[in-house]
Image (cartoon, rainbow, N blue to C red):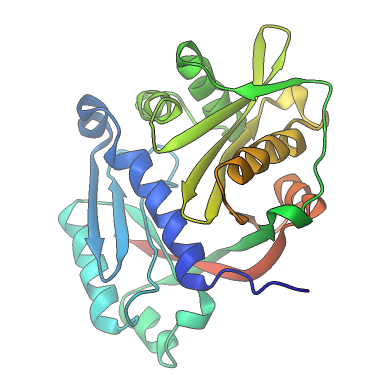
Length: 266
């Protein structure tokens, strides 16, 4: 029997919450250094990182509880202008885009960017991969190393972002995992649980250790933790192609839809 996959409001909602926690729960000094501002707007969240060196962290998402309108997009644009944001991505599930979306996008200067797969898998239907690396939950003394591997794996500079990532590794809203080669942490992943659904996020591996099954094993470890917590589904998101998508599909997650990243620039 094929179970109905989680609806867009679930898929969008849990991603919005973990992205919000990454920034809103950063240490106050880190928030000021990065120029972080957050807001709940129109049933979703708007995140601004004025001094983001990667153009990744400023985004608006989670819009599934109220209609997407020109007024909503105008409110988001006003938020970014007020916070002197240089560039932001507005991410809306395709089924939630209104018929006049093309007109709304043009009116507010939004341009289509890359696509993001939203994936989901029923835990009992997943295929768990393994690795010769040791997989375990992160301890309290591993937060700095976990954050360093996360940023290095994603090619992000540590300035400012390291404090934010380090706080997430010990944030009680998450369960952080790692893969070790001896005493060296070489790959990381994170898990957020929300009712019957668990989100796989922050999966990154040091370049020298790619191809050794670290992320497949980290998917398995997090899925088992989610099952132990009573979850029925694991969900995630990744780019249109690449190793991350292949790892998730191999584990049994399925793409529910491809979401476009709409780019706004000041």
